[in-house]
Image (cartoon, rainbow, N blue to C red; front, side, top):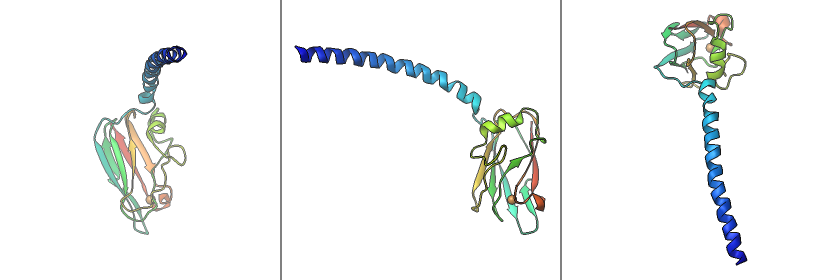
Length: 154
Ligand SMILES: [Cu+2]
């Protein structure tokens, strides 16, 4: 009889657990809502920019690239690593820093991506939520070698 009562309590608890399970699910939805706002999903095309250094000059190719807000740019190490991608905070549109801070991963400083050392390695930047305008950026180690470029978001 006592065992049945315990089982009955357990059932009640499970029932409650089931209800409880629904509540966190609702909470998850609520939590998921700010997530897209924090890092909006990339919705557009993916572009590639090559990163090279030949010992004399550092280059992003193409040096000027026009994309749409929501596109993704993959910066790929082709030669002469290490390379990185760093945006000039004063040479991007108003509001762009907020957008990039949300979408740039594993940054080593604000608006500054990590060093990529392997040939073929890529650093991907989503321009989801990025306001239109010119985004000027550079490679930290190769800026003295002219390694800077521009992305225009339409
Ligand atoms: Cu570089």
